[in-house]
Amino acid sequence: MQQINSTALGKEPIWKLLIKQAAPASVGILVMSLNILVDTIFVGNWIGSIAIAAINVVLPVSFFIAALGMAIGIGGSSIISRALGAGKGEKALKTFGNQISLTLILTILLVTTGLVYIDSIIPAFGGKGDIFEHAKIYYTIVLYGVPFLALCMMGNNVIRAEGKPKFSMIAMIIPSVGNLLLDYIFINVMDMGMEGAAWATTISYMCCFSYVLWFFLSKNSELKIGLHHFAFDLSVLREISSLGFVTLARQAVVSITYLLMNNILFELGGEDSVTVYAIIGRMLMFALFPVLGVTQGFLPIAGYNYGAREWERVRKSINTAILYACGLGLVVFAGIMFFSEDIVRVFTDNPIIIAETPTAMRWVFAATPIIALQLIGSAYFQAIGKAVPAFLLTLSRQGFFFIPLVLILPKYYGEIGVWLAFPVADILSTIVTGYFLNREIRLKLKAQPVQ
Image 1: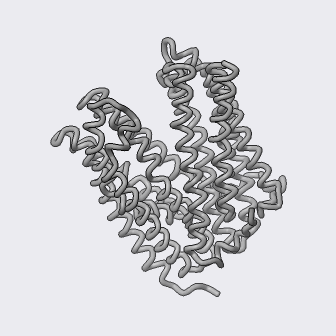
Image 2: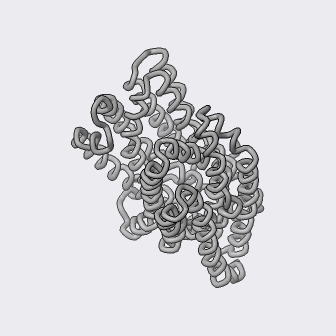
Image 3: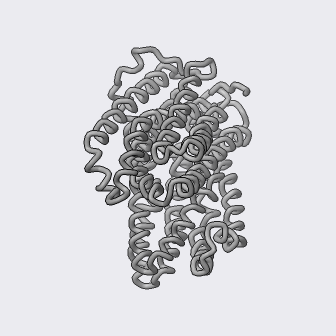
């Protein structure tokens, strides 16, 4: 594997850099998405439907702790990219050390709390009746592995900030592939039931952590920290927290969205409507992976060149990323428009679901070709360390537009109003993001590069 120094982010052609960064990120996102689907199929077939319910009870807890690691990773990586671009190596090292310390302290605190109050937390998340014991088994074992997952999520973003996307991709693939293989061994071969499912997940997290640790200890990483870098620096912590909060807020809004959608659709159309949304939700996760990959690949390029005050390269990275992501979005749009019914048949043979889902799916993906501008625009402000606009633009689609729309439109248009809320929110948030991004480019990036 070719070793790429972070200085390549400031020298290589933007189009070439973006492909190098985006392709591995896209593959990693795709593999992780497939893992969620296949893992659910394995557990449901080999243990039973109650196992799926038990895992769903535990997922919000484990995902929140993992999201914390991701938030610290993304927040710190923005600082690291800009510090490396500006030649401030010591600040990059201090930031990385603080990321590790912060992730360890917060995750261990949360895991300890989670274990102490286990008998209260599981029922609160729906683990009642026959589900409780299965959920408790899974919860206890997986919770021990979650700090490793949080460290992996944090470290993976730092690897990408160094300009090493292939290593980042491998780090994302390891827990996904490892979990599926261990599921087969522990559940199907050794008949360990819920304990097997839990240990498969936990060991896969540990394997990923081992790989990430190896990367930073090897010559592949430029970030060689000492013990003094682990000591907290309040200014660094504030910057990590302000930028990382954007990611945490996004996760919170996504959870609220799912909660609202499930309740509204159940009232309008019962279980069938909820199933329609479940299928569309899966497609949103899978179909948009190349667009999300471009967004992930864009972050370190924009952050590094912004830190180096190479305004022309920053402008070019924005334009190129939007062009690539819009093109991929157009391909996704075409696929959904022409093959929506075929896609639905992969999930179910229920005639009602097959009849209702294609139309709903087409509405949900109607604005896909333009969402790249919204994603790249909000990602840009996060990459350059502007937490407030990053926070507001990230939440604009779901928080400011979609949630109010999904509460209002169904009152006038019924179930179709739910699906209309998606493209309307996409269009409005894209217009707002486009305005602020264009304003930033005109006011900040019009200056000539500093030599």
